[in-house]
Length: 183
Image (cartoon, rainbow, N blue to C red; front, side):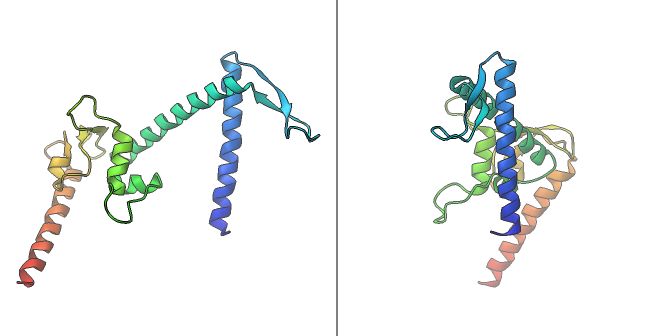
């Protein structure tokens, strides 16, 4: 195991301990039962303080929802600071279908953040405040190739959107030049 893998394993262990403590705090705060249980049933290894099982389930579910909300807040921060859906997907440990048939990492990240469309026949969208122009932007996902089709709501003089359009145009120009050189 590498030093990085060791550090990640230790961080997971610490997070699990912190989550167990958060469950106990939640159960206590909501009037649920907390008691002692054997560390290892059938063995004399002592006891540990723990939530009653159903109260523990309810608390863990509440913390799961809170964690998901926190994750979506960080997605909004990432988008506000100009990070793309590919980068968000990497942070979520998403992977593209190796055969190329499924959604891309960027598409999976967008779908995670946007959730289901609000009504039948509508497309999902994800809203965030642009860190460049401070306008509320509706992001329609990484599906359309042109930046103006992917995000609406930027100010007319938004530097971030102008940079994305310029990068898109430069890529089109490069592809056109390669195609013409091959003729």
